[in-house]
Image (cartoon, rainbow, N blue to C red; front, side):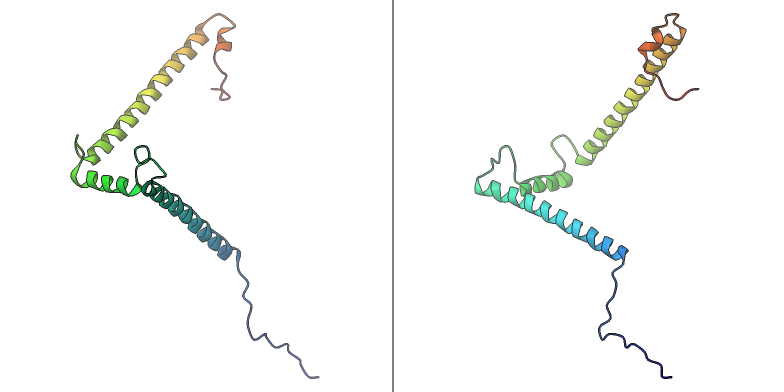
Length: 133
């Protein structure tokens, strides 16, 4: 008996894997996001230059970038920009910490007051926690 074999096609068709499809989709999504960003910022710039958008309320993106570069290089009228950024972050963190501590203390005091109260309605004033100690 003669063995018969099926010849391979001249152009091998390669199956695209799921990982390759996901990577291609991720690149497409990133490209579309960048295209939308360029379109919006470019339209904003052109609208201000053409006089369609009031530059008093919506400054030019190029002017904003120039001003930021100037502030980083030379500082603002009240000091270096890096110091102002640090102070803002510090104040936000301190405010969060103070608020968290004060809120915890107030809640703790209210819980202790409700536990020590003889009124059966005192427990109804505080929301129940699902954690039982």
